[in-house]
Image (cartoon, rainbow, N blue to C red):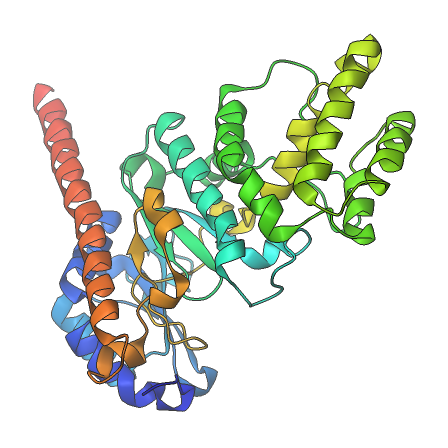
Length: 398
């Protein structure tokens, strides 16, 4: 099969779920994330052929999962929350007890800045936005919140998902989740608002400086790839981020005379800004972080905060197949995102077609992704065992 045909998905999925979907480690991951409730209290959702949607499904073990996958053959598999009873009863007033802390980052949210692609299209150039997002969010979750069980998954088409399974993360209430999401969000405002980043004039928080260090590693490459400021429309958008009219006019006159290179134009903007700050103390204090604000607006992660804040939002399962692309939602290490080649992400049709030119490479990449998943699950199981032992010891003290 040289080319993916969505019409063949129903024929391929039963084979994929039997041979390649990591059922055992998947159930172990869900089980750890469900504890102290049984696995059967976790909601699964299937989208079948012709967009038939089934919610409030559940399994008690791997055998039930295998039976359900073979019987229903879902084109899309989503994961929901853990209830105080089986999900089939959950629609009748049951209570959500826990849910992984999840983050959804989609390249469509970068459409106002990326120039290489729009909407569902993705290429290696705009994938660099995801590289930055993975590095910034992963370190923040570990260093600022102390989370350790973090799983990163390619969405299958145009973004990434992050699952945090630490007990403290799973049991966060909605305000707690909102606080984490708000802490990680620096880009605020709707489509009608030009300037969406405001850092103030106080010293920058450590997390913001750390994020800027990540952005700076990739900023020149992204400027070369995207050429944000190379045309009149892009230049206009840049000027709209400058709140001081006198300085804006000075920048506009200078940049319009320059070659179209975004790298050179941004370098000139930085030089003009530094010179203007030296000559104007009030301007320097008022717009202290203007350059940093521009970098953040173009490159900082754009989170769908509603996904993080809510309990009821279902998220696509790791290792499910994206029905539009046929690509596997593979797990990956965040520090390896920069090495990911979108053309080398396994697809269901190349995995099942031994004669496909990409078969060997995709098989190897699939094994690597499963290994990454296993490492996260093994670590989570160890942490959960230690936590339960500690809890038991505390209860014995009484």
